[in-house]
Length: 285
Image 1 (spheres, rainbow, N blue to C red):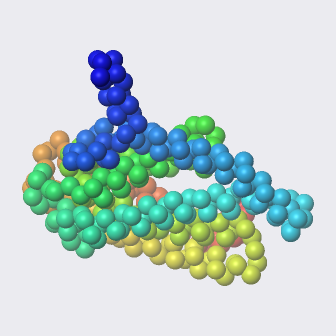
Image 2 (image 1 turned 90 degrees about the horizontal axis):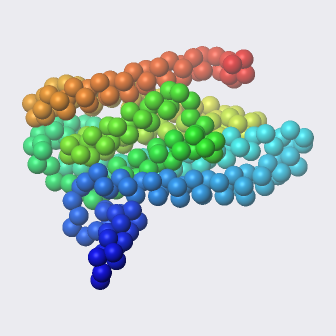
Image 3 (image 1 turned 90 degrees about the vertical axis):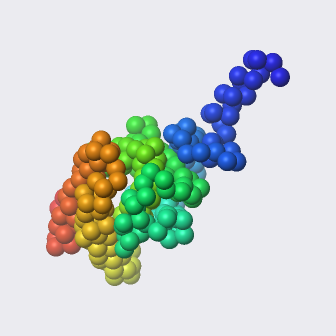
């Protein structure tokens, strides 16, 4: 193999073959190069979804509901899309948390930090963090390109801060806490989008199911984010973490984690507002 061929092979390996797929590879931020490709594939799938599936569903709704009935096509299918990927990531996060996270769970947080930095790293932890990062990256790209879900400013801030926390956790070997935290917070995501999909569908016989899903979302959001956030994430980060991590790690992560929790409080206030106002409040807004 010539020198030029060797260089091309190295470039191909770096940009195309994930470091994660290399036997015996060690965690490195190079792992996140593949997130660009994953995000681009998701954008391609989303483009095909919007060109092929949504118009057909819109036409079906127009025939069933009459003129104007097709307006619900995009929000219904958009929420189904998000619920599928959010549910898949949440399921993976919980599988890794229970089976390969070194004992770090929402109910056993000391294992998240004790023994740092000599935590064994599981391949499942690495893949989950890379896939979660890739999906956030896909939504950021989609917002910039006007494809798929358009993120509002608070969600943009959430995604950027969460992606920063994932990178820090990956590099500093705080993978246990990162996986557990996302598993805990992400439970409510698919439930929310199922409720929003039902709301957009506006099918009268499904109104009861819609509000049941919304109430389930509100309960899981409150328990997993508002209540368990301080118990399973903030408290151990301010008490146990300081016994093991250098101050530079603590201060950086504290600022980012507190910001993410502040967003949960803002969002929960909005959830309560919607619950109190009901459909009338939503239509007024």
